[in-house]
Image (cartoon, rainbow, N blue to C red; front, top):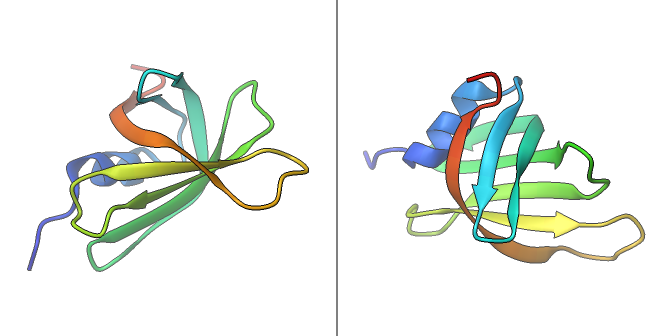
Length: 93
């Protein structure tokens, strides 16, 4: 059986506590996941960033190499891809 993505596994293990995520060069902040689950090796989660009213969705790529991030701002239809999670740490660390 293929291994779980290490970033997704870390996010899942920290959930439901707050975590500090870096998503590319644009997004860096404290996130709280409202849901997080694995379907075998596929990871999906949804949450919010402190001080931001957008909703964020997280999912592993088809090849399981990365966790990609989508963003939906209030009043928008659909999701906008904003990057990949580069790092994840406990917010209280």
